Image (cartoon, rainbow over all chains, first blue to last red; front, top):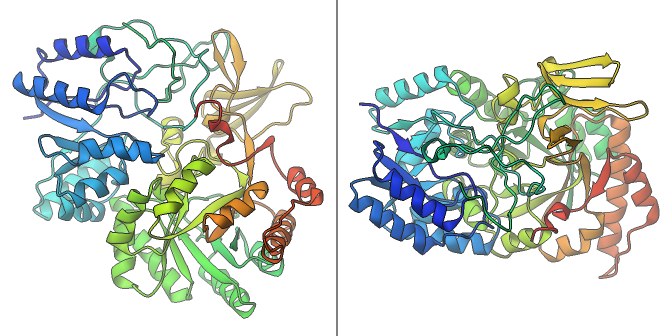
Length: 228
Length: 331
């Protein structure tokens, strides 16, 4: 049966907002919940220990929990935070870059891969399967045909590697290292559940013809984080 | 430090070598490399001529096969690795793990360089590629600031090559899917960011408009020079203001940082620009050759000659920035 996962929060929310959100999420009909800061290393409302405590709480509520790593690792400090997730064996880890892969593999921690891990063919899947890959996410730019072919080839190879697909919400299309100016519009309020997989749509393309052309995961380090 | 220059054509390759490049990099005329434009790149015959020309003059040749093959392209991409091997190239620049594995097993003696498209931003990531595919060298993404490059270099298990000059990609290379959102191609899938077939230009009463398919990317007033419409460098309306909301088009120039790059143990500086003319390549290669020779001969003292900066500024789009300049405000 097709399962439902709640992806990691891509927005910059206050600590309390995050806790309130997950208190609600514990009641939702989702099988798996992903926790962790995946977008920006400067968002430090929650520390690794906070995420781990949250993970234990959600597990106690009957949820599968996966810890998600930062997508763009840039410094030793980022690596130190990464190691907190990739050196524990209480929870499965979603590796969002190759630093996470390396640390998880070295510590023999089973892992899955997020949508920003470039898995485009079965050969890549086989390499990662040999090292501890348990499931994988389809990169957001790949389409149905490729997904079908990959699943078919995995079956032919008798590899049990469940595929997960980003199904609802704004797509994380790119992660610039720069932060956007604080002038970017705050997204209209949405319900907490619908905000889960969302990224703010910030731009329209022409005055008077407002159409959001795309969204980005990049986010300014607002002095006061958004509260819903 | 080696000077690694782009070769989008045989004349450009020759010019790069003649003007002091230690190595040149090229791609085939298909989607196996991340600079896929009409009129660019090499067929097997030209590639063989280029390899011969470079080798006779003591320069090395790297073949870029740095896009990501999907199942229906797997045989073609593997075939590209085979072609590169039979040409006798000095290294293959790769990004896809499956292809790295194929190259490492089938042609272990041909050095493998990790492309910037591999998006490895830490020494841990580099160790992953070293341990699994025995890469010799990695090209670092341009998103890293000098401090961050320093951090990677301190523990890097492989040689490092750093982009030194040319157009900038502001997103983390290899993990940007913006082009796929508006067009049916991207750097990873087809080697094309904002492919030409999706570009539309239209003169309107408000100015010259550039679009990708039907999405307006920019509008130029009289006297403004129009740039190629990539999604990340457009001007967008944010709360009533229209500006480069994501990033201004700037070019990279790390001339000032050469002594530091040398101290960090960087093995090579890479010039961007396979789409550039041979004349451009000549000017850029010559300038960087002078700079690197000065660095070598200077015994610790190195000054940037104003003439070099003038030449490079004249060849650049928009402003010039150095490594991680756009980080400084926030770091």
